[in-house]
Length: 184
Image (cartoon, rainbow, N blue to C red; front, top):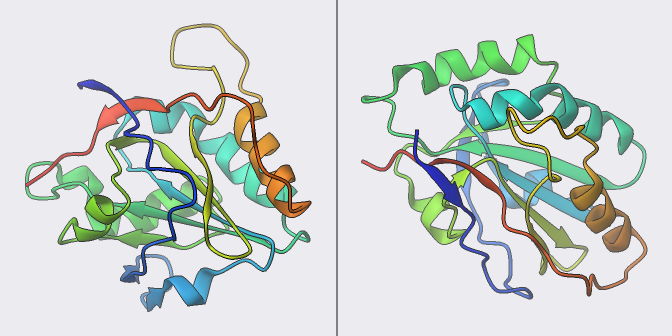
């Protein structure tokens, strides 16, 4: 596993559109299908990454905590499944069920969407405002596997709360860190 940081897509970037298979429902979903009226959170994750596994339950809790707030969440896996079969769409569905994901978990087979978002690692988090303009990109919080820091979601929660209130985030945004996306 190569420890990789986010590329930090420029703030204000419009959310790139997509049309990807949701491994949970079996339907193709576009950005407009997962748009949240106050905020849309796009997460690049995968099944096998220990950094994602470290956060799985807290990601599910985060989504649950914002159920009634006009914020929608979507996760995308862009890994090469030929080299990493544990990230296959069939196994993505199992992972979603086992971790209580209450959000679409999309498969980016061509990796074009990861490139459009300039995603570099798993997990990689993006918060877009009501206009689908990027207001946050970076880490969930300071917790990492083995560093003994509690998982709070402080960074991403702060970004989502600001987006809900229509405020800009002026504090320093720390890149996420995790396994590199497994490019073809």
